[in-house]
Image (cartoon, rainbow, N blue to C red):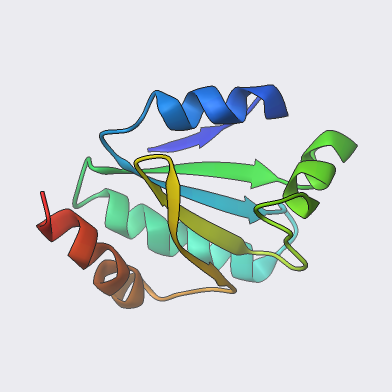
Length: 114
């Protein structure tokens, strides 16, 4: 399932309210071809499990979101930049696109530890 924030202040409550899932935080923008490809690949993964949710943050939505993306712990410099959260902690991050197969491999360890 894909989610979007209305405001930056909703980020931490979102993380804390989804501790039973792996949360994929994807910083992107609408006019970014690699961002669109990554979304498609994530959609494929989401069809196979309910233990993963995606929070998309469009950095062009407002200056507030752009500033948030540039702040710690993210400090993003390009999009898409993606972070995996588990139990309120970042467990993995990458910049750029990943294939659906690569994403499956990345999630496999966490999902198999349940």
